[in-house]
Length: 423
Image 1 (cartoon, helix red, strand yellow):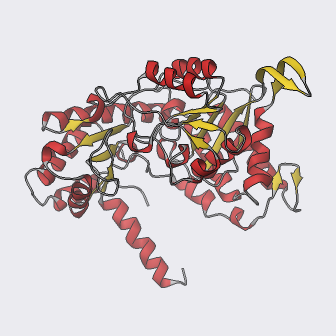
Image 2: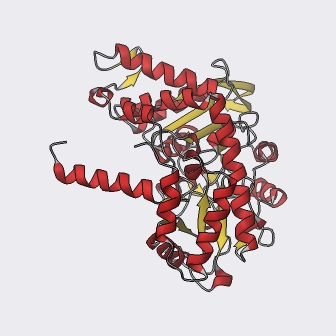
């Protein structure tokens, strides 16, 4: 690289990634093949529109790549093109979520997602997000005692508020979601059911987390996190959605069929985006192919197994886990009994080469910028090849930093050296 300043920083970041224990659940390490697609000549091409319907010439091969990404995305989750449309053009998860709302919910109407400080996402209707400015957000909460979803209470709230769309799928919820119950809630409220599976999409593809596709009307995911792909968004939407009792020009129509995928496509382009990032779409195609391999199923199974061991070891060492533990790749630790904040813990761990992120816990008395918890996950370490034995070691190292105030930087580097990234 001619730009030596940036080259130096890239090398420094590569070294940092190799030498640190990454416990951020929304981060992972892509394969060299995905990196090659992202850094390819695909980034040179403008491809406004959709395959065979572009506004620029020279898209013969871009069309093939986008079609491959769409077909493989359906295959990876066991879906048929006749039932589900798929859009691989969203630049990331947040614009994908915005596109879904723009496509399905009239401006000013109600949307319902989990409150941010309970584990929801900014774009699910938080007050600082545009989603709460364009639509009326009526968030639901977790059960204060169990710190889990209370389906009966959510259902009652939904029937009372009657939102146009209900969102499930979260950023800091360690338990498995019951999509069937959410389908029932959405039906009773007369709402669309949107599942944001960005965090656990790789677990669904790997067969270790229930599929949302049996119950959802629209499913969105990022390609990174547990899928181990590029930072990009993918939207799956029903081709056949039936509206009951629709009224058109004072005429009552008993049943009307709507193709949600066409609405989503229009919302992405020309509604919100211009030319898609062809290099990201190429990366999605590679990612979905990788997710269909038997090795990926083993990986997903190991991610969950690793999280379970890490959670149990942390509990043994005196850490309190939100909701009593984990059923997924994600762990939320309440540090109140350690008399330190999530921000303090994150800083102490990072100085010793362990990377986590500070996070609110349900009904957190502390402010979001310095909350009571830290969020942990096992996707990245599992990609490196670490298993149950290493999870016990990681828990011990965390305790030594946060409780015993030891410097364990050398031990962290030694462990990381045994499991190189390969780049």
